[in-house]
Every structure is written in C-alpha cells, then in structure tokens.
Image (cartoon, rainbow, N blue to C red; front, side):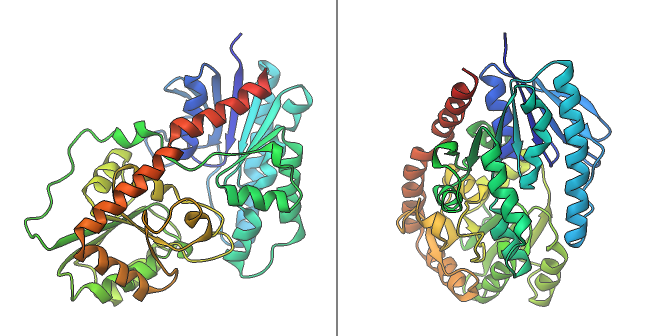
Length: 392
C-alpha cells in the first residue's frame, strides 16, 4: 500500500520553491502527498479550498497574514495552528497518514500533528529558521523563554528533524537536541525549477560597459537592500552602465524605494516586485552578478539563502556578505566576499568584478564545482533515506 504523507506549512503552496521541492520529491518517490497550507487570496490559485496540483492534494485554510508587531504574529500563528490541527486530524481520521511533516516557523506548529502522532503517524519537523536568533535579530533583545522552549520541544517531540546547515544543526545540539535526530538538507534548488524559463534571456545591452547586478527574494531590512543601494551610488560614477534589478516583496519595500529616490537611483535601480518563476529565471540568466547582502546577525551567521545557490547553479558569480555558515561551504576562490553592512566594501567588490571579467568567470566556475557536491540529487538522498528509515 502506498504510504501517505501530509505536510503542514504556514505559507501559500506552491509558490515557495524550497517547500515545493520537498513535497514533489516525496510525491515522485511514490508517496501519496497532501499539503495543508494557507488560502491563496491573490495568486492564480485564489478562491480554491481543495485542489490537486501535479498529483499533490492541497488543502487550503482560510488564513491570511495580517501581522503588525508581536501580537499580530502571534494571532497569525495561533489561527493557523488551530485550523491546521483540526484539518490534519480530520484527514487522518478519514484515512490515516503514515507521516506528517511540519515546516516551521513557528516551532510550536509541530504540535498541530499531535493527534495523528498519538494514533501512530510518524512526525518530522523541518527547522529552516533559528527562531531565537531571528527574534534577537529583529527585536534587538534576547528571546523570551517560551521561544527557546518551543525550539527544543519541537525537535525532542518529533521523530526526526531536518535543518538547513551544519552550523544550525550544531547550534541545536549545543542547546540540548540529539545529533542523531537531525539531518542537514541544504537550501539548494531543484534543477527543474531553474529550467522552467522557455524563452532565452534578453540580449545584453549594446553598451559594452553595461553591468547588471541582481538580487531577488524577500525584501526585509536584514537582507541589506540599503547596503546595495548605497554601494551602487558609490560606484555609479565609475560604471556608467551599471544596473541593479530587485525582484521580490516584503516589509522593507517602501523604505527601499524612498532611499532609491533620495539617492537619485531611479534610472539605474529597477524594482520589479514579485514575478513569475519563469520571469525570475530569465532575469537571473541575464544578470552579470548576483548579490547576497545579508547583514551580519546571530541569525544570518547560521543560515544560507536560497538565492545564493540559485545564482551559483546558473553559473553566475556571487558577491556575498562574509558570514560564518556561508564561509564554511564556499571559500574565497568561489565567492567574492565583502564586509556585511558596509556599502564601501560592497562597492569595492562590485568595481573589482566589473573590471575583471576573467575573475568573474573563475569565481563562477569554482563555486559551481563546489556546488556539485551539494546539489539536490545528493540532498534528496539524505531526505528520502530519512523517510525510508522512519517508515520501514
């Protein structure tokens, strides 16, 4: 009999590529997969409560993100927790699941699977974010005890946990979690997603001095969009054809656009908002350099961004903040590092790569050579092996 697995994630499926990658990997491995997720109020799946997407059964809950301070986050999280717990219980009672995977945040969301676990289902948790460090980064203060307790309890209660870097696994172990319960699955892209663009990238501008930088994903203060703007303002006199293209959305957009206007960069910094996956891939292919400008924080030194791996997979040189978890996987010959939070350091890196196309090529090749060790084919085996052990 085909094993049945249910995923719970407080996001809108199928737009989050890393989550979609996990779901589709298990589906293609022969498991019947269900996803409990948020209602899509704006995208192509809006209004649909139940649907099947590429063989995956999707159950959408009537929850949308409101937020606004700690109370807003708590309301969002608790609303989804209650509805997800009711939904997974109802589905399990109708036709039992063999396993339930819960993707945090919040960490306490794993307990939405309590009834299925009591009735025999195995429970896994994907710990993508170090919530105590994220709290400290966003709030500038140590997290309250319940935040730390929820993290430890989630890993202890689950049958198995996944996380996204070795550094993050070591942090969980230092805080009391068992190392043998945690597998590392790097945030590398599923190659199929990066080949979805059917049209060739647009041709480069006729101006041979043109130089296109790109950054995509969430637009939040901690991702260093202000650092990028200030760096572009400094190098603009030296690179007349410079262009920075920003894709994505987030709470920092208005501040970002205001700073762009104040620096007089509207004619060389393009804000595209959210775009389709196909358009995103086209934009990445057409760029000269990808930028990962995360600010240094307790959080950023433990994680990798999806965008970094996507640039590398597409053969683009990367300008990256010098952060502990990134340096552990990619050396100076693979990425062009700059000092986090430092516009002048980033500006120096932009100029260096602009003036040295051969170095850009070497960096891209060296990074891709290392990336082949981490590619999804290898991560997938770690992921599937964990499920085979759990369900045997």
